[in-house]
Length: 422
Image (cartoon, rainbow, N blue to C red; front, side, top):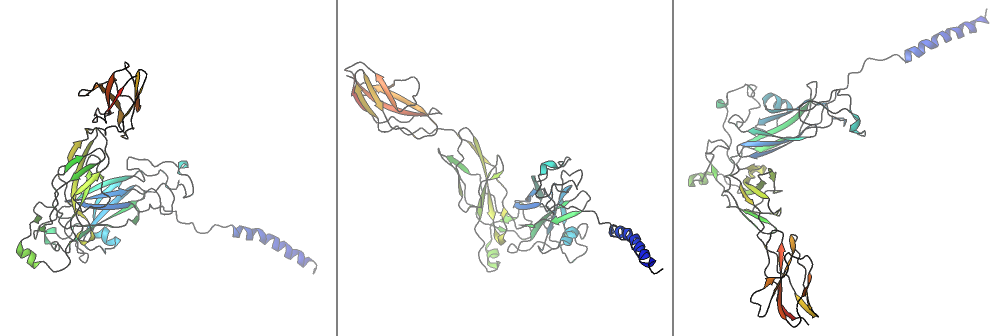
């Protein structure tokens, strides 16, 4: 009987092994589904007159780097008041100024990881903006938008205290700020992280410059305008309104608090045909030089004054654009160093080449002494910088050469030379 005990033990152990294996392979509690959220959109704000232009770039990736983004729309919020608000303050007291539909993936989990090609994933579908695309949103600064929000007042916000009961704007030395923030919303309605904040000043805009004058040469277009004088806003008027600025009165100047003077006004120059900003940064001189000379093209310019009081830029409204069509009326330079060499029955001419990009060729002029009247020898301009004139022997001639450009402008004649064929 003692010998049977080990056999029983071994049998019991053998029976337990499958149970241990099964226990090791048992699944734990189910993991929550992976929720993909888009990265924040890029939002930039520029105050221009009585409105704010927002440049928005739609997210194209998720927070974990996978692509395409699980996104259905981009929401843009604005809040006027203290820039130290929290995201909860923004949602509670701010105003949603735009909701931009975005093309969304059919399956948010069908993504390419950061190190995988995007071409192997199905493209987002829908009628909204393309992921990664840029767009522009305009926010008109209404009377309601200009009033700062009291974050300490639970009734102040959307649907809260009437605007007429709210405090008026601060003084010009401490103008209020309106801050814009964007956020991507995924296909389940969950928001991602908010974008960087884009603040703008609500100070009254400067007076727009008068329409510029435009002059041009072969190499540059010069846009010039009269400088804009800084003006003092009228107390109690809203920024952007037609009566928001007036010439300062002596009593107003005397009551202005002491401190450093505001920075001088500067200017931004725009190509109003394309809307492109031509000045990389605002310029202080009321003059801009554009080197985009293209004959036959029309160039249109608009100039806005820029006030950077408080560190934030406020542009004026734009005056009517001024346009001009570029017409080539500039002749080439006269050819230089014309020389003549006589051989039997031929007078050979040679001269230095012109350097104009639009040069069409050269016209050979010939006459008899004293050379009061020179006539073209060739029916069409020649491209070479030399010419052989077959003439009777013993006759003396006077020569000059003119350069001609592709617009038909002819230069003044070159130096004259006289020679007699042998």
